Length: 260
Image (cartoon, rainbow, N blue to C red; front, side, top):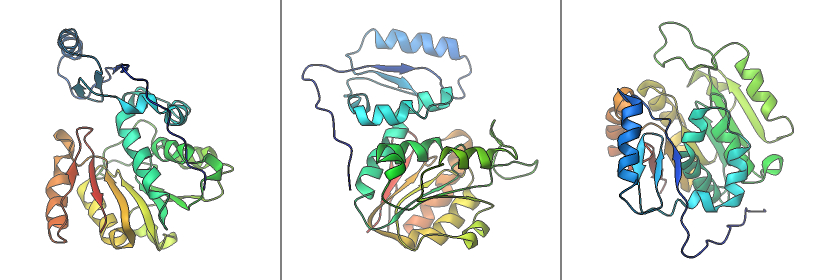
């Protein structure tokens, strides 16, 4: 197995990352102006993106050349470019998980930008594990999850085309949990849930959590986001509590669980 080398950090140098595509701000230009006033008064290592501002950080993702190559090669929208820290959480948990005995699974892969970034970080077409991407890829009025710009009848084939030559990748279309009947791995090392609604996430957890191997990584994309996604935390906390787990909340809006 070939793992990506970590670029050596440069002493005394930190890099800022500012990509102010921010979510649900009432007056985005004013929010950005106020953030820039704060940035002028704080030490370097600034992160202003994906609806959070931090400073005095190493911004380690900007010093990992292999990640930057995988990330830049998969960016398609402002949403992709602003979510660099979230993508690095996926990549670094993937680095850990690829050394375990189990497949990679993403539920709610949508355009599969996150999944492909992780696989490209870990070998691209030579990725050594099985990888599964589940999604409806379409949206109809009345569905519990909200529509996304790329939803439509062509999306699933667009995603499959992205993985041409990635022989271990399977893209499965359908509603969770029914789509699991079309194939699912016995052992999972890395599981990313991004289903945007509580019922589907709980159904995925019911079906897949026990298949995660010890030391495997579970990333909940929306766990720590309030606003439209707070219902996922409210539903998932009792589910994990019943199994004596606590979700680790991350400032990126994600939640992390390490399987025992």
